[in-house]
Length: 185
Length: 176
Image (cartoon, rainbow over all chains, first blue to last red; front, side, top):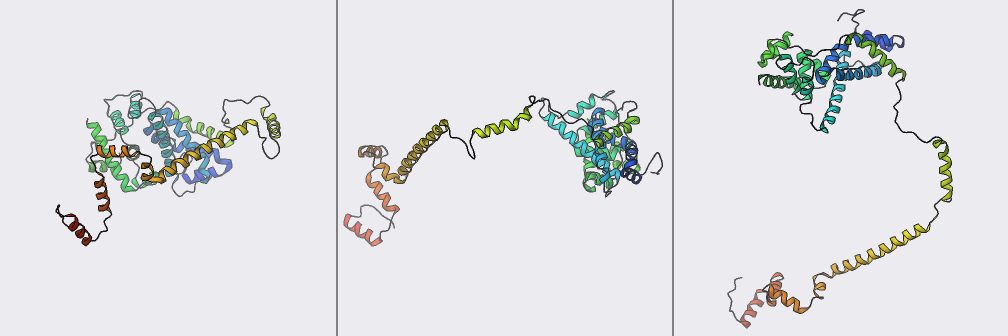
């Protein structure tokens, strides 16, 4: 991505953030640059906008707290995705624990949340695909979403999820097959 | 859809390769345009430590913490220096504990003695007629018990057995 006023490079953002005087401005630009990608990464997992917004806020608060210490062993983009993934999984674990003690349990938790979305139409392929993805185990959902929607290379995904490329390919393959089976019903 | 993603799906033979299916979710109008300012505001609050401190709904009575050291000191003085005053209640509790310990020890000693005496000791307290009645009910004769005992502890030489049988008669076939 070209480095200019509207699309600052990651190095520039990090350097700006480490400068006390320019910290807030650099942070605002960083949020502007990554907010949509991270939002959709989270939203595809948690489904509901308000929850995605909560998780996204937690992600950026973490970024604010720790960016000054970021050692740049990985790219900023990878680091941000990793934080967003961890925050999302933590949020999902909390919800699962809550659902486990509720009367209904959490088997169809995400499916119900999808059905409660505005404009939900089970006859449309985009909604059916979301319902199919909701049936996948968490890690497979992550892999499918990162590959299919974000078109993330396996090498990058391997750094985000700290999993081998081979395992990710196998996971994506399984996820695609399960999604197809669901859509064929 | 990137060629790489499409080809991968084609290789798997997935119908998803036909074309990208978009996300159906909507976002409130203007959400992203105001997000970076909102996040910067939140982060500034976090950085300045001006977020409201976690609070709980409990209150201590007015002046409680001012009086607490005096109250504790006064109570400590009542108990005496370096130890506690022994009350009548504590003496009674100690006596009860000693009594319980004595009863427990006596019971333990009595039961352990019975166990150490073993079967013979216990049988010594049983009347002969009761033993005979039991053996009769079990269809046993006293020589059966003797024979069983000898067989179990056999340490007799063969020639002695032959000599015994010569003297008493070979009325039973015996195989050695």
